[in-house]
Image (cartoon, rainbow, N blue to C red; front, side, top):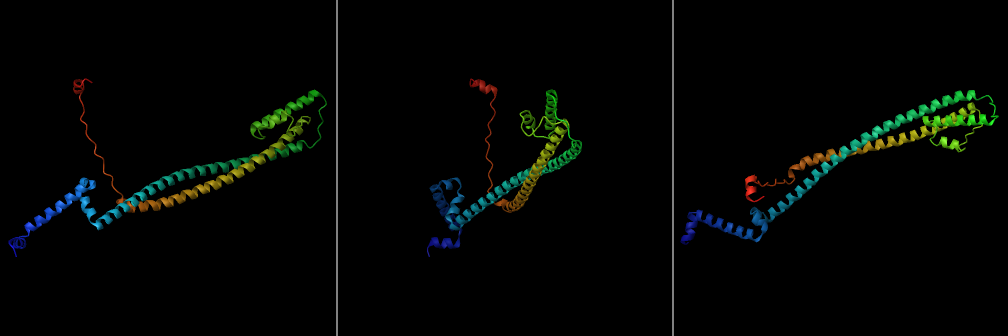
Length: 261
């Protein structure tokens, strides 16, 4: 055994020093071979060991999955809140549609009652118009009655124009009582149609409100599950290092004047 080997066995400090120097030299050479190593020397050691490389890749993958889960939970939360607002608006619309249907039904019934009264008065035969002046009076009465009924919503808005044009089955030769009966009968038919439309609108609004509630509840459940999953993996998301803000010293007015500004 030579002197160097004996010294290594008796005093291990020189051996440790030599091994450290060799390791540092190898790391320096590897670091100079890659840009990443120059920026972060500890990456050289990680890349040099296959197990650590796989561990680093797995950690990056889990971090990406965690970030995706967090974003998905946030998007579902926003969608659930938006669906809740939409459901509230549809519920309000359904309530208004229900009130409109109830109002249309009551107006239809009131018109039917008035028709009953007018029918009793028009049960007796009325004399026909005998002079042009009497015919003109009956024609004006019919137009005034139709315009008033259309203004109340008892007749369609097109009824006055149809009466002036001689359309719609309006007869200006009838006695005012018979004309009132004809207007009231048309009012009942118009109010019945309005009620039917209101009922159809109510059914459609109720269906849409139910669909909006179902969508809201489904999104809320999905958002709750996604938020729970995101909370479990949030610690795996990659942390973004805050950017360093360079401090710029304020420039005095004297310095600006010295620069000729």
